[in-house]
Length: 123
Image (cartoon, rainbow, N blue to C red):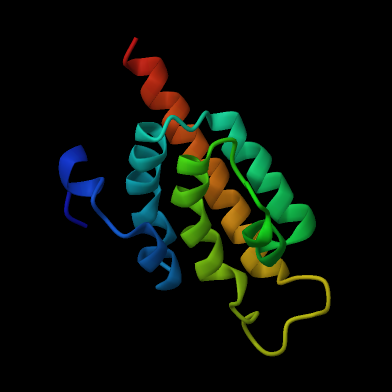
């Protein structure tokens, strides 16, 4: 793994990283982009809970999954990349894709944690 500066990482295509299953690599770029868009960590935590309860596809169809249009534009591609993925090993069950839903929910929680940590250390 190559260590990158914030300026390098912020330009990464988070949706493409997620689509490629590279969740860990997408954490920091997503946190940087979300922080720049003014996303508060609890908004991402709330979105993670929506993903857990309703599924990625449901969350991707929300009119505003985050409070502002700019923030919604940021996260919508993340949700859309995973909203139609089949569950590993076969057909997805009716009502959602549990493995994908839980993985994205945990990832969103991780992004929120990074934003929170960066804000606490920059004070």
